[in-house]
Image (cartoon, rainbow, N blue to C red; front, side, top):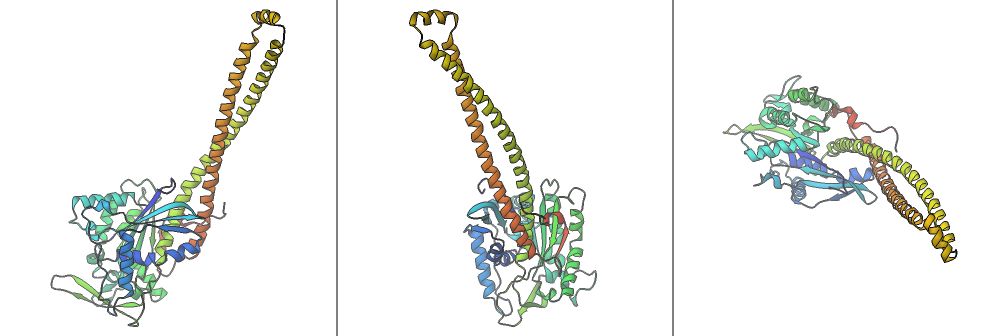
Length: 425
């Protein structure tokens, strides 16, 4: 948790060897630039997942011309619940407002033969995470044995590599009772060959819609259409590579081969910021919606407390006048001759009324000070919440400016979660 704020969670979902870590590395490569432009500060935890991301980037930066030295797939853990993921905090002017956690579990957890514990872990993560990122092997989707797919065709190896039916079933199982907004990003990777021209990119987008038609139709159901946002965002996870050919081994496993163009091309991922931008637009909008509700309640509470403070002040003033009057009468009595004072006290006990008035005045002071303290505390909460809203409202504009919505990118569902406010608080 961050200063009492909720933690927002993102999970990468794909079978082993699909490029989840490579996609996360491409996104991480854009972190500093993306957040700096939005005037947001970041605080990053140094943990195993971050080290895996850096190791992945190191491999990709030094990959050979034929891409033969591959990234090592994420290994399953003895205890999947021990995976802390990659987390970072967002804020402004030194204040932390939001914590995001990316989880990059082993692809083994998504296999049909995963252990019961691994299956339970996946179901719970999918159920609890605010956003799901699904890497898609673009080559498997877009290639057939005789070349690129045409029209409504789906690649020969789509199901073998992408397991779209398996992914669809996992999400169907997890999204049976969704209460809060969710984001699903379909992210074609290894897509350099299929995004060379705007026409190529639109063809890739079209085929993603076909290849994941069952999943997209599920998200359109009455119970989910207002809860689940869906985005298609292709990422060139290496850059400067093209598909060469596919080869199937004796066990029936198909391997894709690529090469760099030119052969000395550097590691230069492209559009790694796009899933990150969409995730942040979505999560910040959800965050702001919650914060605005909190701000509304805090403002209503402040208004009620301010009114109560006025009433307490009036009661305190009345009690003060009553106390002053009783104190004056008692002082007058105490200044009379002692024998007369004793006689007068028998018929008119000014001392008892003085102490009663003093007790009431003291209590009204306590009530007033307590309400005043509540007003000050609530006022600070309103101010702090307003600062968070201001900072993230401004960030929304900056994130939205660079968001792509054509050339293969599309918001398929849930446009309201990517809106930018018309005015800044």
